[in-house]
Image (cartoon, rainbow, N blue to C red; front, side):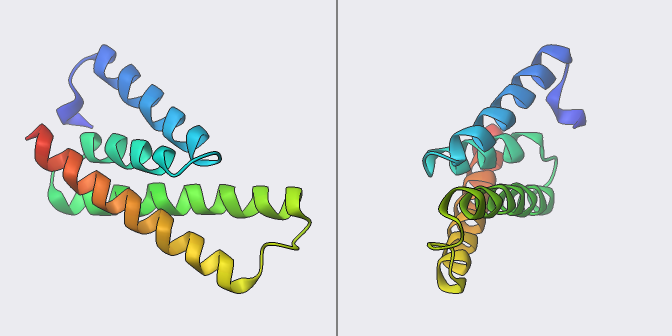
Length: 104
């Protein structure tokens, strides 16, 4: 987080990360926003990838828990869960790498 600078940048990063995770329950754009926040926090490309994976996994776990609680496991079959994981990881990692590249 050393590349983030002062407290204003840290607050902006936290708001962007929380907004991305919250939006991801409603639209895929939230996954991209969370990935961008992860990429902006990274100091190396490897960190951007790791942070993107972490963001994707957190979003996927929240989505899966939400899906089981709302849909009563009717829509949450194994195939759908794996597709959701692939989408969350792909979008978050790619947007994290892109944000890292643009911010450098």
